[in-house]
Image 1 (cartoon, helix red, strand yellow):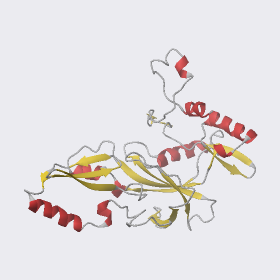
Image 2 (cartoon, helix red, strand yellow):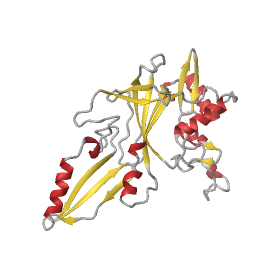
Image 3 (spheres, helix red, strand yellow):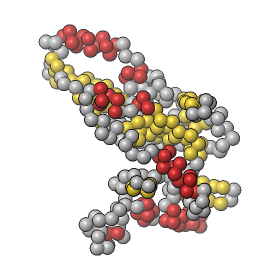
Image 4 (cartoon, helix red, strand yellow):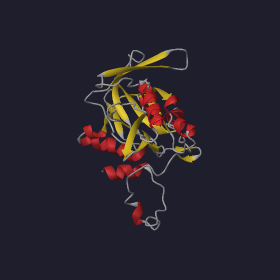
Length: 287
């Protein structure tokens, strides 16, 4: 069900074991199980539950009113409109069935999806993409980190041109998984909320060959770039992953990389795991 609807907030399920009925609610943070009850002996309670669910609107079933608000076949595209904070509206049309879309079908976690997009607001831009993901509320958000990087890029030439061009973003606060947990008396630790972030489109480094590939790979080692873009006749590596980004109060989260630092393991502190994961390990694993 999560895969069928791109911005699905949650899924409700009923599980029957003999004459006991359990109500489950699944979202990107995990599952919540209600206490079971005997739907035969407690028939009035069962009827109240059915009558309540009969009156559910699409959003109560977990459909996101902003991104994918209807049941049925997935539409080819869907327009999302949100304010820009300056009294204007930004329109982003997501190409939901494009062959270039990148989807991740998982039960919980970030569930990042990237869709080609169009916009009248950014009609003068080159191709753009929209990133839809469920980010942890307790972590520094990607837009916050990028804003810090943009400030650094103004005076640091080694950074300038190597960061993604974020055009706009929107946080859908009403999708927070903390809301339901707070209401039922559970701790909202690890709560997630839906983000929509619009970027200028990048090309993967794997599309490059020969000299261009090696030159850009060296940029990945020097600046840890993951993707590339073209300016006139030049190719530049762009850092497009900030899970390990250093901020003023330390690492955002140092356990997010899945790459093992093979060279670090050769040192005296390696076998004990006494090292911080860094972007160069991703580049090392890539080559």
